[in-house]
Image (cartoon, rainbow, N blue to C red):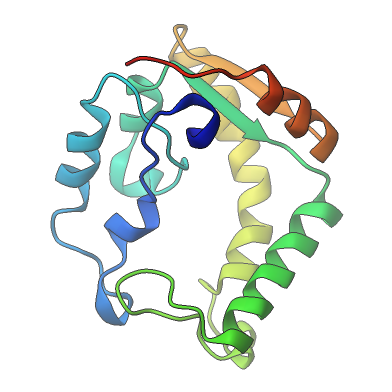
Length: 156
């Protein structure tokens, strides 16, 4: 979306996760700073820390509501690729050993599965609580490709 619109993309995970997976102390201030801009693109996460900050400042929420099998397959494959290749994610962090899925309740794969239902509830609530927010539900890769083709550069 950022590439198609020319709006800046901020990886919200990079603002949250410090070295050693510690929480960066200025997370909320960093989010406020980039969302003060006229236009921006980011992921909707960290609602415990940010509350309604992102949907209250956004004009559009694009909800990738893919079937569970697609969502989980992509999450698992991305996690495996990153771990095997030791891809640096944010601030020196890499995916933890795969065996940690057995005991870490916050392991990304367990988190992804748990979050599916919660995300649906959050989107419905955001749509109700923020009437200005346009919600675009995308249910397949074909829908995503079509949507991206409709985007054009935006001048914030």
